Length: 300
Image (cartoon, rainbow, N blue to C red; front, side):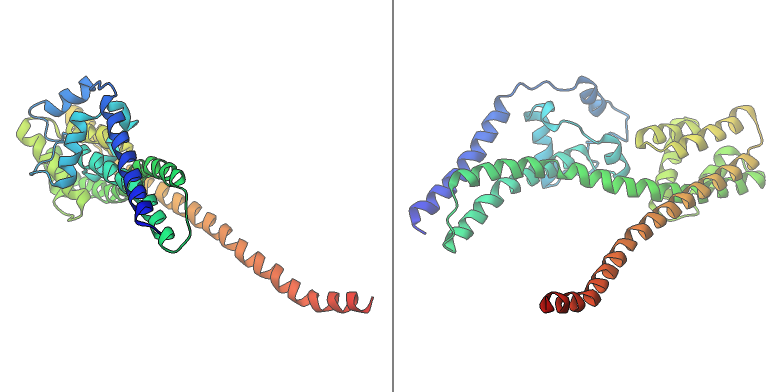
């Protein structure tokens, strides 16, 4: 491979990256007014996208992207999923840009490697592969966030069932609504109990009813089970209704639903496992029948 070809490959990758940046830069930027106001609103402690500490490299890159790049470039931001995982929007955007940049670099590097082995690849193919891989890897963080948030919601639902039982026991022992909710949240040490305790503590200092705080959290994270629990506690706090039986029934229903889901998933996995066994049986029968067939055809 000549030095001129290596220079051409490197130059092509840099030119493709520069053209992509120029196109993105000249696209009209129309910031989302509601999103901008929610980020700038004071007194909003759960502003997704505003890092609590000094931003690191990816967050700084994401903050630059929020200010400089058009909002339509991101297509859809999984805000609820990011809130579940406590990942800032700036860090998420930074991950997308880093992944896209890696997608631009990988094909030219592979092309250079193959050319060193004597397997020449056209430069146009390398450029097209760079753009395509960059577009695919740009959306890879979306898939990762949605998948991790689904697992986190399932873990939250499991822990919430235990938390509801603890609240029911506290209420049955004569504790008040807020006291029972806060005491039950202090029992566990998982991230779910910590998240509930933080919300309840914040509601105490802000003067907000605890059921309203949990309902807001349920809307923010997309957790219908937590919203149902908040409605039950609202009835107890505002109307003085006895909710012990309702809480125990709700936790039992949640456990039953999760058990049914796990049984259905186990059945699906079991059905998929029968496929390799069936194929193995077909191969075994073919091995048994093959010698007889070969002798039959050889005799004829």
